[in-house]
Length: 479
Ligand code: ZN
Image 1 (cartoon, protein in one colour):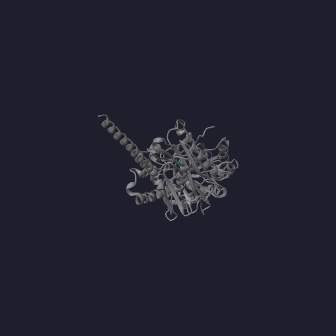
Image 2: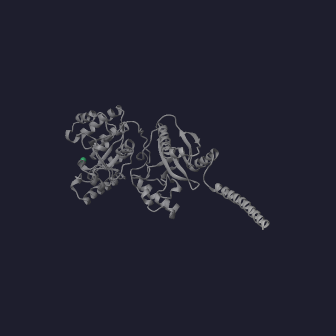
Image 3: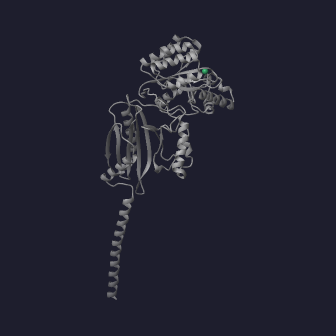
């Protein structure tokens, strides 16, 4: 019996050894195969390869700025950066800001995990940049946050920051300087067709929202040598793992969308800026006198025109076209200069629509902003108007005084005009005369004269939103 038992024992022993070897071999194979397939890294050199792959995936050119690279591997947090260096100035500031913001947010999210030694997180930043033959340099910086999920490094958040700079002075260009005022409509149409051709069934439900001609869309783009590249955020039109989607439009595709000649007026977001606005026009003589000042000093203003004063008025179309050529912004001031607070919803809509149509007929472009007559509009009315509703900060009372000296005095009395909107009217010679005095004074005081939309974008860091009321409190930047 004893012998027999011993034999059985040996048999089991061999079997267990065999099983162990089998497990090690099979496990090893599975591990080897899986680590080959998995999109991850386990070492410093592994992360260097992983980062190199990311930089390469961006594609495009790096024609502009000196390329810098830094790769930092950590057991939990790893960071790989590739960015252009420009020395001093606005361009360098924007690059530094992107690098700083992305790293701050990444560290904040994952410092606790790093302390515990748990997980694997990567932040990657890369870029593409162009020197175009239109005296413009462009830069797109990409940030990609990744996290190990089920053994795979997966994209958690992808972002793009796009800039266009004037080559000779490094100042940033705004969309209104590059495109015609209603450019988003044309871009929206093109992008929709492109996405349907290219991706068809893969498109996410509700993707149309992200490619409509709204304030939130098509604000990120770069000029390249033969067109413009627009960026669509990850997870908006396609599943997030597809990352940021680039849509290229050639100059041919951009006909009627891009300005024939890009307005190369310099703008520095770090310097004080003020927006002159003129209501109730156009009136041929006084409007042109104001535009003469804009042209002489190379500055811009916003004109809130009354539809009725455009429709069928000889020479009105020329005034509006001149405003656009000089880079000024055209707003709507309703069709009949009606007090909208006394009108029905339907009649408000009619005032807005008719005015938009009249302005578009005259100059080929729709107005981009709206000013309610008498400043009479609340949040509810602005929703109905469905354009950015702009009031003012400094009322010059020019319509009441009709005296250029008094108008100038009201403006000069303000201690700080940075971020402010000044209200005047383009139908009085006294207001035109005041403009001749006030523009050189503002320039001497160090102010940049910008359009209302530029002011909202560059001073307040927001895209003008349809249906939003930009009132006194909005422009009161506090002092
Ligand atoms: Zn008015």
